Length: 108
Image (cartoon, rainbow, N blue to C red):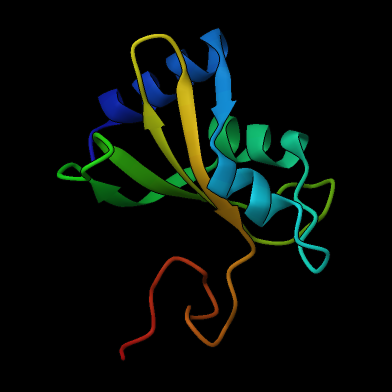
């Protein structure tokens, strides 16, 4: 993963962030309740843990951070577009699918 792509993600987020319907639905689930502040923290302070250059929605990535306002892991999937950063999904990863570092998927 190139730092240029992370810079592009953050540059587009500085212009505008667009939450796609799936992301809004995921963020509003009662057991998650992910705030826009948490998403912004992941974008600007988090790390890319998976890169999806061939995504049909355009080059996207999975980012992780532990926002201090909630102190829990948050994953977001986002894709930089010409005039904005699209937030495709946002969720709290669980240990049934992720290793304790929340960076590594468990083997199936």
